[in-house]
Length: 184
Image 1 (cartoon, helix red, strand yellow):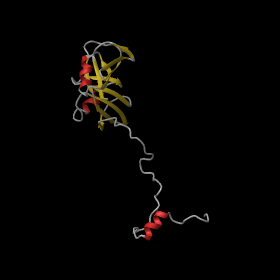
Image 2: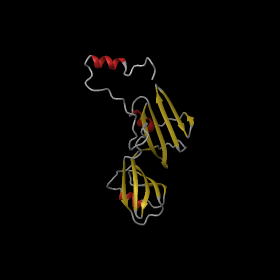
Image 3: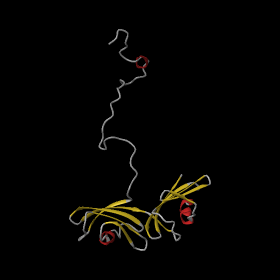
Image 4: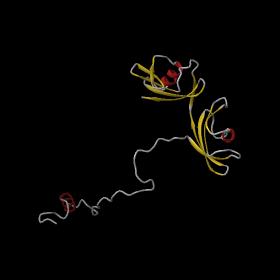
């Protein structure tokens, strides 16, 4: 310790001598690790609900599918997902996207997320669409390529979010597209 160094900070000494301190000042403790480990920005929620279901006779360990409002199933991965979709009848209402993984034997864990579905009768081509509107300017990208086409169905979806928006669309099947709109 240096020759001219105080044992306590001046503000604490003055507060103590003035009778303002009723208890000794504690040093702040170092941060503690908690159950979640390292803290940071949390991930956005991926699923609206996650359920476990018992389904007999399914092949494979993973299935991805979309259930449409007319009870049609668009299978992206897996074989016959009908038993899984039937097990979800009381849990989720179409349209929804589901990802299922086998947990052992006939038990499956299924993540379910509600989605928006739009029919585009005038096929813009491509598999992915990005529509942005901001400050009166509109940009439409089909598979990353700028186009001057107009898609009023997607514009209505975006305008429901406000004057400035982003609409992402991904082809499901034929003229049906999964859409997600976000206000800017």
